Each structure stands twice: as C-alpha cells, then as structure tokens.
Image (cartoon, one colour):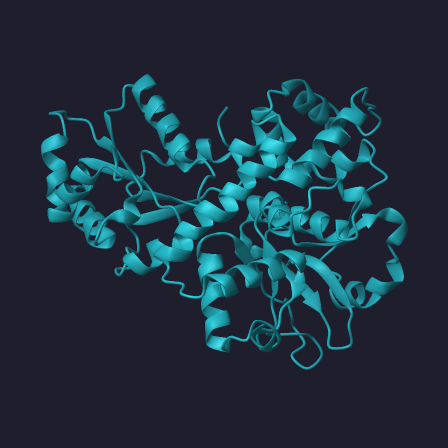
Length: 405
C-alpha cells in the first residue's frame, strides 16, 4: 500500500530541487522512502539508500559532504540518493547546500527528518530554491482502510460518492471502522494491529518513548510540566488557548509555555490555528486554537479509548478529525477559524484557496442551529458555509466528506 504522498514524491524525482520528507515519528517516512527506492529500481533509475542511524556513515558524512561521492557508481544518469534521518548530521544545511550547488546535475537527494524542530534548527541556511518540503501526516481514513486491506469498503465509498441515490450494504461496517479510526488514530503500526489492548499499549509507547526522544533532543528540562501541558492540550483540542492561564496552572513561566508549544508544534504533535479576520475591531486577530495532530495520541494522553458516542468529549474528537482531514488536503496554513469578540464562531475557514469555504462541525445534526451563523454568512457571502456532522451516520456522511478520499 502506498501513502497518498507517494505519487507527489514520484513526480518530484525529476525536479532539480531536493526533497525533504518531514513528519512526526512513526508516521512511516522510512517505509515511504524504501517504496520510492523500489520504484527507482523498477524504473531503472540509479539510486542509493543511506540510513544515518549507521554511526560509521554518519561520521563519514559529517567529515565532509563529499564523502558521498565515492559511494556513487559510474553512470551518466542522474542518481537519486535517499538519506534517512538527515537531522542526525552535525550540519545538514551545509551537507545539502554543497551537494546541490556542486552536483545537482548528477544527484537528486530525497531525505527524511524525524521532526521539523531539528530541521529548522539545523538548517541554518534557508536552502531557498534548493529544497521542497513534503509533510507526511498520520494516515487519512482512506489510507486506514487500505492498510486494513479493506479495498471492498473503499470501492463502496467511491460508489456512494458517485451516485447521490446509492445505498450501501456495509454502512454498519463503515460506521464501526470510522469509530475505530477516531479512537485509535492513524499511526500505521496502530492501524495494522488488530488487538485493541495492543493498540492502546503501542500508542502509549509512541506517547512515552518516542515523544520522550523529542523532549530530550529539544532540551526540555521539566519533563513533568511538559507532559502536563500536552495532556491539557489533548483535553482542549480545538479550543482557544491562553498562555497566561497555562502558565499559572502549570506554575511555569510564559516563555517556558511558549517554548514547549513550539517544541510540540515543530515535532508535528500539535497544530496552532490562527483566526481569520477582516474587521480588526470586532473579530479576534491574535488568540489561536490548538489541535492535536492525531486522535489516537489524544486518547492515549487522556487514557480514554471508549467509543465516541458515549463520551462527553466526543465533539472534541470529531472536530479534531475534521481539522486533520482539511490539513492533509490543503495544508495547515490554509485552515483558519473565525470568532468575534461577542462570541460568534465558525470552526474551520479556508478563505485563501481557489474555491473558499467554511465548515461548522457538530457531532449530532440535531445540534446545528443555523441562526447562530447568520453574521458570518452576511459578512462573508463569498465563503460558503456548510455543516459537517457524524450523527446520523448514513451514506450521506461520505458524500459530505468526499474530501476524505
């Protein structure tokens, strides 16, 4: 199974820019690179794969970027060089810059880095015009079904979406799979694990072991406060956050809260969403919202894997999934929210794409009160507003959510 990002990377192989694949730990970056390597072999494109967790290779490349050259076979074709865990280099920016400036006609580098935090701090040179960054998120629902080897369900969803009158014999199965996706999220190793207890234990490992590596490598000193902040953000995913309140609650400085938020965001564990505004006096312009990047991780932080429909925070989980879906398709920079100083609000607004739209998210259709959004509709007639709800779960759910595919 190939991730949705695979074809974009294949198309980029013949571009001059180097490709950098980023994303949280355990999202499948190394697997994706191996699949690209297999594609190159199948297409007879010369390639080499370097894993910089190999200390000997790392020392060699740290000594000089030109240490790559003796590994290359003699060929007239441009060679694709895959470099896994490029952030381990002492100076990755110099490594990439020198090889690009001197050998771009002979080599194309495709590299992974475990988090943007290390990349941003190591890439002291902007590498402007020399690189394109590709972000690999946790799996979308269609990727989830593909990993579960449920092509039959994927085919049924596409049939439903192509015909407004189509009914499905598998709607109850689809509902169960969707609930499982919301509870355990989109990490590939979690999706392919069938045992629910094992799923929760593996999520705990990602939460503790892999996040701890991010914490240590980012220089976080107060691990307890960091995790407390992370859990607070999980419980309030999709809510406005106030640094002063968090600082007082955790008994740490504002600067420390901001540093921890920065680490979490650079490691792709949270996203900060900025307000959309045109009226500076009446609309929020500064205070952002925070979403966790994966609902499985969110539920692990809360230690709650109950079905969404019996949970008090089901709306939080549903809105977090909707936000992630939009980010995966349009990019996180495009997804905003709208709120006025007197409390009028629309959850998700994409005002800057080719066909702008806004989405209000409700778990249950019965809770939609169209009159609450009159101000937004009047002020922004150029941004159509729709409603996305989970209950009742019918074939129309997938028609409303064609974006998932």
